[in-house]
Image (cartoon, rainbow, N blue to C red; front, top):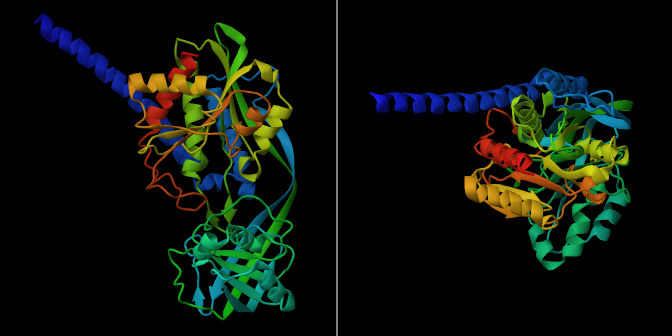
Length: 435
């Protein structure tokens, strides 16, 4: 009877722990669903999506007991964005075939509105292509669209890498200005939130997975309309939990919440990039605020704005810091942590070996992630401005070779596997609590 009683107690405790863990995952899933919904319109200036997301994150901080950082007097640390472009319309036909936005093509946010039917001139980029020759041809006849086919460009790359790199940037060049470019390039089918005010022609990126490259279209019909937004205000959302041993020293947990927004009526959910990092930040904040055991160091949570257009939020925080940056002992940047089947990479690990070794020791004991890669330095996300100002900073992202949805509309909550989320969460939590 005693043994049965003991087993019942153990079962009850185990089941309770399971429910608590399940509740954490359920909270994460609810926040994921909200951040990637059409309500937030891809979390950019389009339809005020970024402002709705900012208010939502602020309310989560409030509801979960995360304090306002006293040096800021608000959850919001705001800065101005002088100008931005929003694509309001983007319809494309090649000959008589109407293409599907997001599936067959993506436009770049360039500055010229254009509507009508125009001639196409086809240019195959191959091992014999020369940038100067192509620019000269375009200069002679700038009133057409130019179809740049990079299908065989790998041959040029093997022969002359410098010429290849020059031609890869041809459609960003202002040396010769055509009416527009249509680009078929397997490495370039993605969208960017950066605004190309210097490019005064449309650029249409075709999806090599859906386009028949044997076709050589003669005509393009385009209805492309862009709107300029001036003097917008973006805000980092900042929360705080005091430490028990070193309250005047800090660990920063950062993740950008902005994404690519919308093109016409199609929105980019941005599930992995970077609803995932934002969810994990909120999840960690909730757990640290509600647990009885508190970290030794005070924790600053920063959900950054403007990452997609040039790390603007993290640059603003580090150039206008509410604390002496010397008192920040560690910055952990979470960006694209929604997968994990193949483990994680730790950018800046080689620059910060002591931090990486702590992570490695935790993982060797607990087996939270299947593999860890010790990455070198990179300025690819919001850890970079901290690193450049002497703060020990790492950037953690998850790996899954089968999840290839980056800056496309398919990066959605419904298909994001989240198979490594819990392990990454626990790894970071243990690092914070043992720092």
